[in-house]
Image (cartoon, rainbow, N blue to C red; front, side, top):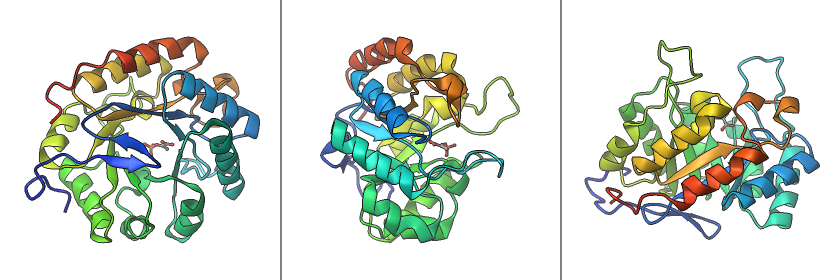
Length: 266
Ligand code: PEP
């Protein structure tokens, strides 16, 4: 279903009127985690000023440590809905448990499946049946074939509104949190008709790498970026070291504005 063999034209997925696909480069930005109404609104305004047309923000956080901040749950979803109301930015947010899909889908405009759940087949099937566009991150140890098969689980439930997100894979290199597999972008675009975006924040795990990795992603033809921003990253409850701050946003806006004109993106 997701292969390009039977569907040669690359697809565009529309999230509440915002297209993600071969004719544009879409910026999704916002806080890693929803912490407070003020922090979420501030981050959303930063994101919008940088050119974002979709707001990201986690209300359910799949953390490595059970002692780390796990997200605000439904309260976080309500904050996101309020911020959508105030900014007009549709919401992309993660769902981590098949039992929560209906609840999260009642607030979200796009459901995110994270790297840790990328082969949670019950969750993939549940999001496939939820009637909302899905952003499927690559599992941190998944091959491209495994990633596409995960997308197939969503598609099998009748939902082809799937955006694939390369977010870095585990390698032996500790200088970055994950290694951005930049070649995956054109490879997957050749294999699948689905849009492919890049997460330069979770790939590198370092603020200083977000802009270079964003440029690389756009240069190889990614259909969009998903970027963490935070008004006060030193106080962030989740992944502060990778969040862009106000001073970085003009540069991000420039990356978005100057993207190479669609060379090799068909
Ligand atoms: C996220 O985008 O909030 C996130 C946790 O990303 P990943 O699943 O790629 O680690």
